[in-house]
Amino acid sequence: MITASVACLALALYHEARGEPSEGQYAVGQVILNRVDDSRYPNTICGVVYDDGEFSFVGSVGGIHNKKAYEEVLYVALDLVNRVEYDLGATHYHTTAVDPYWNEVFDYEAQVGSHVFYINNTPWR
Image 1: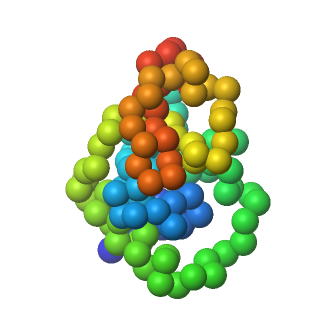
Image 2: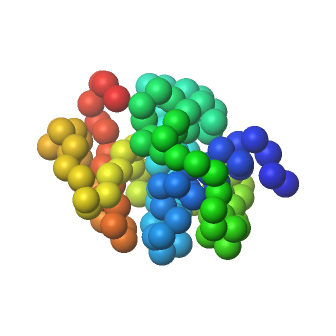
């Protein structure tokens, strides 16, 4: 069933990880779920996805232009919402194309495809 939570997660996966292998898509999606479970973030998937300034695609991209890619991430979103986990424990990620300030503060966890994942063990987000 396509709920609002699944739709929000699929949209985030489409814009953040559609070119990644499925392991990378699951890892990006799991970051969103990990944030839902973290008291420093909103407690819903849509709340996390649309949290001010947290995901670069929000407010800056158009719609779905690749139906096949969207269908692929939709299946990943459904799996994740139904708790089929691919959990690195990460709360943050970035692509290898950028070097955010926080990657020196958070704990490196893994690289999957072109995304690098971190665990935030600090009191701030």
